[in-house]
Image (cartoon, rainbow over all chains, first blue to last red; front, top):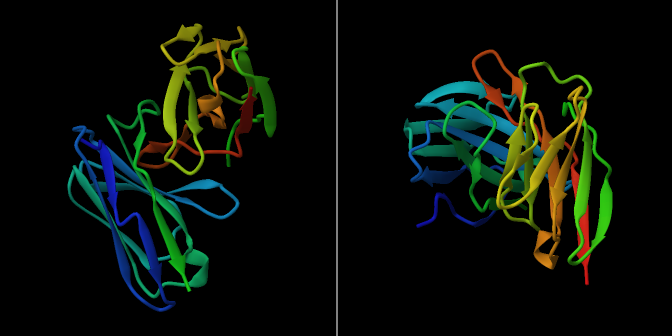
Length: 113
Length: 112
């Protein structure tokens, strides 16, 4: 069983489209995250949810909207995709809001053409 | 912004110990140091964390200086599969929570 699973693994889409990435964790963790890794390989926090509540929103354009229907799921919807959105998006979960034991998914490589 | 400083790259021979340094001179007294690594383009993987005492687990050892301004991650017998980017991290506090902020890390290359 994959602990943190993301779908899809690859996503190629045209500018202006709307797309969603899904994340599910089966670890029973309370906290989930979205990170973005750009072409320069920097990993940047985007959002964090704790028990379905948004606790971190790191100045991400409002074209990005996370949704957490329950504490095991955190989805990311992106409207009006731009070339600069091309990146690898990682979902992660952790037992609480401490810094240990983050488990990351395998990433979704988004390419906007 | 990351609150840690690491060398951009290091090399290590297979079977030898890899010692990865990290400076965190502004760390507060109750803040932990966390180490993660990212192999190729996989998701980062948790390695170890510590506060002030040295820590060891099945993956690595963490040595923290007495003044807590720096630490060293030790992979006792590096293998080719340990080639990765290693991140030394101190959490960043936001209004309602905390998160790991990844810096540039150290790219460790293990060769035979």
